[in-house]
Image (cartoon, rainbow, N blue to C red; front, side):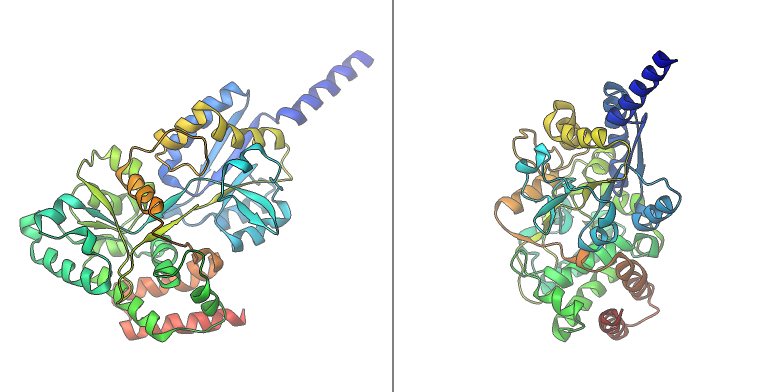
Length: 410
């Protein structure tokens, strides 16, 4: 009996140290779901564990509600992604301090709070207005001139008049459905918050969080949103999902795409070989010369997990192993957030982000200073109504202003 008990204790110790047979990771980038699952399968086999990847995003909505449901059910993932301050605060009670992990010294964009590291940066990403350089050349438009509202308005009008000649169905591919609110109330919203400001400048963000609205800046932003909606493919704008939005651009049916460099794998899969790059958003009358670049999200480790050692190893191996690096850069097409990685992404949009970043022409991501509920439940419907034509531009400005003021009271 003593021998059986001893064997049982050894098995329990091994299980505690190396995992309970299954490691779960939840992340919000559906565009890398297949690549991450393929890497996880290989890594899991090498480490004697089954790795389950749960990708929440795109048309399936945000991760927040799913994480809450899983937590309530006692099925919280071992590793999960969060996007910034508000989501960190929501889960800080179960997020493990990662300050002493080996990869920390290799990145400048880890998520930190009160001097400690809590988030592993998934990648470096960026977005502006993605453009088809070949179609712009046919229309006689230099993408370098696309740096203000007036410049875009002139370009959009010209392109729209040449739709038949260019073989396009619309000038812009953008979606504003409630299910795709991350395009409008996350990414586009950031134009209002940081366009034209020094990197890290939170002046506009802090004012809006305090309910103070710069009427002129908001009006110019509303003009930009109206312009995008006016020249967008109507079907995609109102009912299109992620695949429809990216697909229209990939097949040359639109000149512009309102997405970031994370679409590179999709464009590769669609055999989109035309020249492309990013231009700044035209959300202001004045000229702006930069795009929005940051770490999009961070992996946190659930400190209540029974697989802490495995979870730590999974993240560290992404940075230090050939397989991990190859997955991040070549398979998923991401710009690595860590030094010492020699690989570079093949995607044209990722290369464009790197060029803007290398030139120091970047603006912050400030949208995550606002709660997920505010962005998804308050702002998203306002954009959706504006896109559908059920409210006017003046009403869009009025509702946005009210939203910021009401947000202070909560």
